[in-house]
Image 1 (cartoon, chains in turn red, yellow):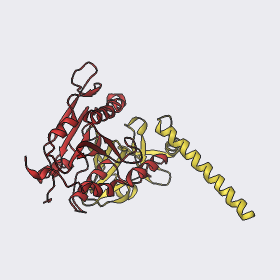
Image 2 (cartoon, chains in turn cyan, brown):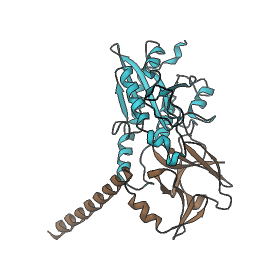
Image 3 (cartoon, chains in turn yellow, red):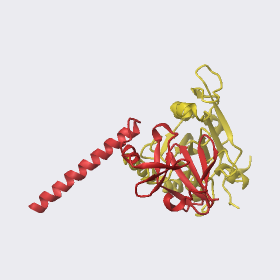
Image 4 (cartoon, chains in turn brown, orange):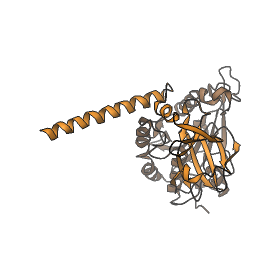
Length: 215
Length: 136
């Protein structure tokens, strides 16, 4: 594995600079019952804004969704050698079958946390793009060792997942997996849609974001 | 003294409005009722595929396929150069060409419409239902 895959730990402050005010602003927006009034960035806008900050490019063109199309943020980064292949994690039903279509999704079929730990090179910070349900939700995930102990941080726009902070911290892979499972499980109603009209697949997509220079 | 009284009175009214808005927000959040949308819908009529128009001639997109996230979208973010970090708020009345407006694509997350100049994508994501406008 090439040594360019982890970022210096100092980028955490740059990420926090982008995210710190966003979740409170989104939370205030939800208290205003007027649809057109939305403060702060939505999930993909926030994800893209963090990526621009990481690469120090204010005007970098990214996708309108995180995965799933030729013009998605993942595909744009991968085309420039700045992201890994997409790793997809499927879900199991309560009956331990792979969840397909809009079948219930009970737990992850494979550990996201273990995969991240396995791909960590031992110093610096790993940064991943995370898609839930083929881009229904976009998040950023960081992983580092602090005093030798693992620390996973999920970052999004709030408020549904993280309320005022925009980030959730986990110290074990099991607690990260459990949080991601709970998120997808809790959206069973959404996955079925109105009269079963559309289906969001139960999956988590993960790609590693590499340091480098965008073309 | 009277200035103090009128200030107190204004504050009471303002708090009343905030309380009503919070009640409406809570009802909407729990998918019980969307009072403001219901009031809005009383003066709208259909104007095309997914479009509605109000008595003042303002055009809106009626996103009605999304359970309790049904809404009327009057304005959207317009990205002149794709999603490069820069956008402006665009009013649908001033943007949509109703004659050439048509639906062209749909998947779980989005439905795409076009007119002669722009592409309009309606998303249903963790942020609810919203529209973005791009150059064609």
